[in-house]
Image (cartoon, rainbow, N blue to C red; front, side):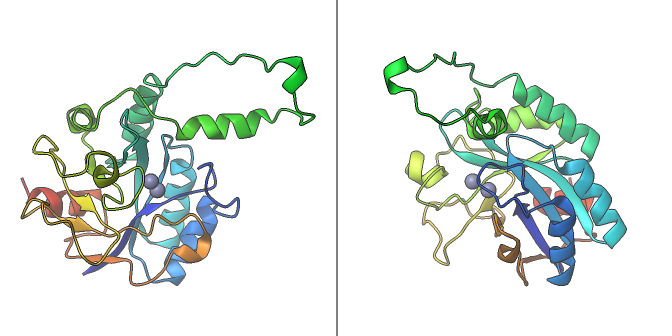
Length: 229
Ligand SMILES: [Zn+2]
Ligand SMILES: [Zn+2]
């Protein structure tokens, strides 16, 4: 068994702690006995190069990932074979950003708070992209990636909170669940995963999600999820 955690946020996610640097994540993952991790920030791969370097130096497996917000406001994990593919996918995802013109607030309602362009940029990262969850697997395929709904049974930003059920048109490689009791309509044979969805360093814990992988890397995970095809 390979001890994995395939859903960890870094400090570039607007909702994650500033302390979640790639180096701190890798150090904590190694300490917790994890053998394979994926860093998945909201709609960006900005931490993947530093995380890959840190994981290589620490001797643990690393897969670059991204947590996509679909047009339905559903979160999906996308993992890519390498950092080059991750950057290519992220660039493509950037073209699907919603462009909303910012109107200056009327003088009477303007608050005496200085603008924080960095905070505004981080908030934009979280927003939905113009792609449906139904179309996401087809869009990920040319990049050689794997895709599944994140925290599918959570009460927000999930398949069950938005769609209400597992619809037959969801062609996913797996599903990530939070609760011990799983939804009754989940397809049989669909691999079930657990991710910490860590936003703070101590959210990264052992045992993670032990999986019977042949190797602690993307190829090992792909072979397990796709049945070696
Ligand atoms: Zn999420
Ligand atoms: Zn997440």
